[in-house]
Amino acid sequence: MCESCAKDYLHQSSSPKSSGSLPEGLSEATEEADDLVCPECGITFKEFRAHGRLGCPNDYLVFQSELVPLLENIHNETQHVGKVPKRAPNASQRQYRLVKLRTRLRAAVEEEMYEEAARLRDEIQTLERELEGETAPSPFEE
Amino acid sequence: MDLDGLTHTSGEWLKGTGPEADIVMSSRVRLARNLARFPFPTRADDSIRREIEHLLREQFERRPAGLKLNYVHVGDLETLDRQLLVERQLISREHSQDQIGRGVAFNDEECISLMVNEEDHLRMQVIHSGFSLDECWRQMDKLDDALESGVTYAFNEQFGYLTACPTNAGTGIRVSVMLHLPALVLTKEISKVFQALQKIGLAVRGLYGEGSQAMGDFYQISNQVTLGKSEDELIKTIHDVVPNIISYERRVRLALVKENRQSLHDQVSRAYGILKTAQTISSEETMHLLSSVRLGINLGLIDDLEIPAINSLFIHTQPAHLQKIRHQRLESAERNIVRASYIRTYLANGGAAPEN
Image (cartoon, rainbow over all chains, first blue to last red; front, top):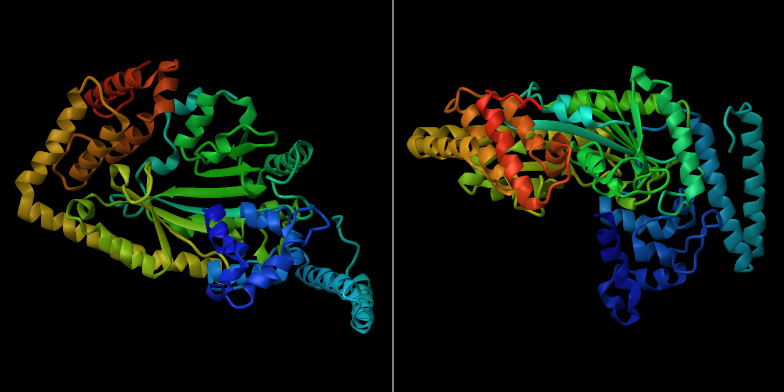
């Protein structure tokens, strides 16, 4: 089941000494990632690794770079093809990009990469304006 | 809600009326969905789960895709009733644990069931008799669309439908068929089937049992991957392999009848005989014997019993069903006696439930 397969994959990272047997770069990445927290549900990546279950949909954005290799391992793919919800697919795509950019902005500010941060901020503002202008008032709250 | 009525009926999908029903017991499509902006069930507290349950129940009451759904809150049910739902495959074993916000909606025919707050906010399944995956998917797809018009699903472009466990992300679909393969088990060729299925990324699980030992010679085949392939592609993988397994089983059955007719006939007759006269019988032995009898019916070696009747027996001899039929809790030893009595009467009536 999901818990055991996620554990199998993620628990390899607990001993840094054995990094030779792990997928490239994963052990270091995982240790740093352990402290990542989702601002919406409060789950840490470490907690996810322990239980094999995520806390909320937003985790897929917060832990995005860590989840990609995990999904590759499980499904041999990382890009969804197939059914999409009928409602506002364009808006949801922009929404997705927006949240991703905001996460990167936070990271850039933390790492004091201010030029990068400024660039990201501009991109975010452009997207926000686009989103406002293009979408009609939506019938559901975000 | 009174579930006693369920004990006198069988789910529609047991009737054995679908295509290839001699070997394909049922086809099933399951979708996992979550509401956007809500924590997943394990992370959510009681009040949030109640809210989610409320939002979804509102949608169920609107008769999505024209369906009339009955809703039960798991916590309102007695343990025996919950077990009943598990035995009828309307909820998973995990879902029978009481928790605030846990419930299930299902239609009268029991071919559609929607679990609320299991591992994901919504786990929906459509199950039909025989080999009918396309029909299952068509119905599931329609229902999914109808529900989506009233709530917002958690979804992003890269990872698809977002689920609590990454193993379900993407399409969130689990496609499966349940096959009855007594001949392949008898000739020990079933392991070849396992190997072939593993090679194309399909999982095989025994029904009513753990691991590879399947009670009653029933095997469930399902997809393992849910991301990176479309729903149609995932359905097609199983859809294309099942006919090969069907013809393999049929070939082996015919060969057995040709070469070992006497011993095969003897085996199914003895199984039938024991079921008709035993005074006490375990669940495990029942499964084993029913499987032989089912094979016997399919091969024309037993002609006074129909497939739907045998299919029903598989369900009605399960622990919770027996206790509900008797209106009392029974310990294991007592259950074995009740089970034997139920089967004797059932078979003496030519495959009709005993009057109660």
